[in-house]
Amino acid sequence: AQSVAQPEDQVNVAEGNPLTVKCTYSVSGNPYLFWYVQYPNRGLQFLLKYITGDNLVKGSYGFEAEFNKSQTSFHLKKPSALVSDSALYFCAVRGTSFSGGYNKLIFGAGTRLAVHP
Amino acid sequence: NAGVTQTPKFRVLKTGQSMTLLCAQDMNHEYMYWYRQDPGMGLRLIHYSVGEGTTAKGEVPDGYNVSRLKKQNFLLGLESAAPSQTSVYFCASRAPHGGSGELFFGEGSRLTVL
Image (cartoon, rainbow over all chains, first blue to last red; front, side, top):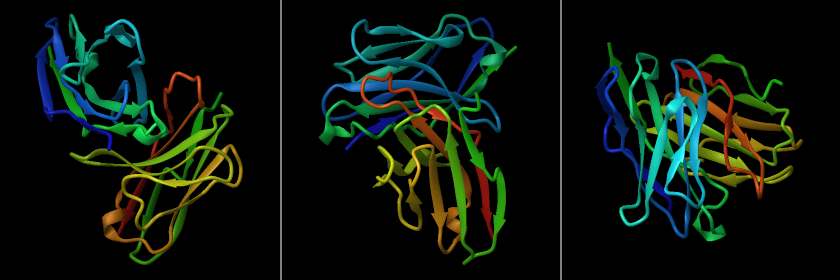
């Protein structure tokens, strides 16, 4: 079965410092991996995805994520955090085989990012 | 372009009442999903559909039913609401095979069961 773990409930970062939000996954076959962001009282918005190819993927708002197959991780990163990045971040995984959850996108519990001035 | 629209946005029910949440998408997407979001538990998949006339169970299907009579609509029903179903419900859709896999979400429907 697919699963996603986000080990940190909250990450606190000073503005201008680099940030990392951690994600590990479990899925049969090769994974499709995603990061989404949720602002208060809003739906989720897509940030970036890994399908295949380069392990470092770039997304919206200056975010990037590094896929590490051996560690089954897909950590979200940004070189310089902004106060406006404060939000709830979700990692998600979808399998690429029909027995591995091809049709289902499974989310982690979310990590709240707080960027302080 | 409206994207994914959910109605109603807010609803308060008494235990045992029934209701239906409607999700409509105008992107001609084949796949549609219903999730619930609870504090500390992230989004959990309730039911999903891979095309008109099809539905399948997700992680937490008990107490919910769904229907996909038209491609653009995906309905989530609660036949006898329970306080444990107090949550924020999100609908999402995506393109099928060959698409990027990105989900497009509605703004959510906040349900309170007293």
